[in-house]
Image (cartoon, rainbow, N blue to C red; front, side, top):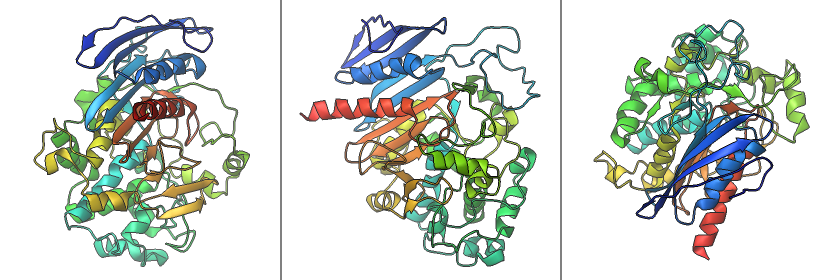
Length: 455
């Protein structure tokens, strides 16, 4: 079977199990000289999603990836393919002296294939998982979203932040997306320097009056708030209250014994300096121009940790950075979002049959709190409480969708009306913040399949 797109040949063997198919696709990548196995299962009617996933390897230079879709609490798509450990000629190690010897390449072996159990650092997709924590604390009566952050964290009221509300933090309205003195990678993960820095930082706009993406500072703002309220780190809270009860391979603070499952980040495009590690939202030239200005909020927000940490480093993966440091499988993220909006029949939890958000909490999560020009991303963005909402800067399935993309390509979200939980994770990192073409191809395919089922 020949699929659209140059150089891609798909051969398929099908095994029937209930309503699902087991698909094994070998995709020859023209000009690359490699063969990629695309494997997994799709329910009847979702074959276009499989085709779009396979096409990403030739059309968009995919390295290794997985995509999972839940509908009405049941998994209907489960796909993976490519390499977990891309060759060192293309690996984006991000630090010149990276000497990690844990990968097959370091020991002389070839690239490892991506498997169903491969996990991946998902960058800002982490924000969507972390945002569930304060919302669940509110649902349980432990946190007032309209309360002042300083009520729980007295030191935070310094430098004109005494009126910052918890909801401002979740909607990127605190005015603290930057640090006057950036943290080193070591300081960023020590658990002390980050909270101290954001507590001392003076807002760059009056809190609550405007919004701008808190790309890095979100880690210490949210992480410290949760620690003050619960006495637990946010990573531990997620593990004990979300991941374990739902059976999710999802970590904020990767255990040492899980390191071998994690795919290594690799670049799928070469960008010229000086924006090599900066954000890129095509086709908005203003974003790139803002990033080139060292005094812009865009540049300063993404440079709150300087130099950029090595996201393949075990120490970074073990840290608890709710802005960007989560590690998860696509299965875990899709299942997480499915659990936010409805019960999971197989969930190992007594809470609401596996449903995380009560109806009122779900409404709050996706009610618009911020909209319009983003002071950091320099495009129009929409935020609920902790979640990006469907719009031009973050196209999801439809108007009711909510979730979070990750810089470089990964995406996870839910749509209550369509009753789906979606997740796509990749180690082939592009330098974009939102609307990655690989993720969008999959979202379009899902939309097509759902429309056909309703016809």
